[in-house]
Length: 285
Image (cartoon, rainbow, N blue to C red):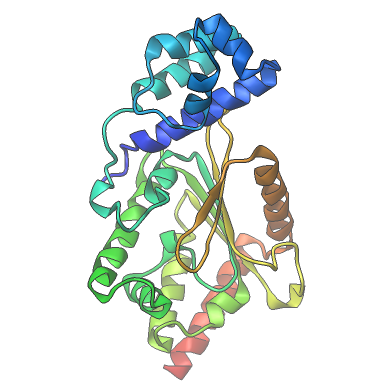
C-alpha cells in the first residue's frame, strides 16, 4: 500500500487556499465572479466549499491572476489542481475513514499530535491497535481486522521521502493504561521507543507531575500543508474525528500544542520514561 494519491484531499486543500487568497485580497465572491465573467458568486462559493469534482486549470489560472499570485506559490497551486483528479490510494478503506484521515496524513508536510489516553495511531503495534478498536465497541467485529490492517499500512507514509514529519506528545497516563494486557503494553512501549529513533518522528512524554495543562480537555491533531494552504485540526470523537479548517481555530490549537510541547520531557528524557514504564509492564505481565 502506498499513500501517494489523495486527489480528494488535494481538491480540499486547493479550495481552502483559494478561499484564503480571496479573503486576503479583500474581494467579495460577487466581485471575483464579475471579473471571471460569471453571472453570480455561487460558482465561486461552491469552489471554496470544495463542492466540485475537477478543478479547471484555466479557471484556477484566472483566479490566481485576480489574487495576484505569482512565482512558486502560483506553480504550487496549479500543480495541486493538476493532481486533484482520480481516486484515493485508500479507496478500499473508504468505509473506515469517512474523514479521509490517511489522505490527510499522506498530503501533510507536518503532523503534530497530542494524545491523552492512547498511543497515536501511526505509532501503534497491531496487538495494541486491535485492543483499542475492540474496546471502542463501535467497529463491527468483521471490520476489526481491516481496521488494524489499515492502521498499520498508514505508517508507511513516514518512510516516504516527501512524507510528513511527526511530533507526538503523549500524556504519561496513556503509557500506563493497560490496553490489551501488560504484555501488549510492554511490546507497544518498546516499539514506541524504536519509532522515536526514526528521523521523521519525535516522541515526547508529558509527565504526570506537570498536573493541569492547556490540552487537558482532550486530544487533537494538527495537519500542516504548504502555504498558502490553511492547516486542518482533527478532534477525535467516539464515532469518528471532526476536521476543522478555520484558520483562527487552527492557530489556537497550534498555540496549545506549543505549550504542551514545552511542558513535555525532552526526547531522551521521554525515551527513558517510556522504557522504565515498559519495564514495569514486563514485571506485571
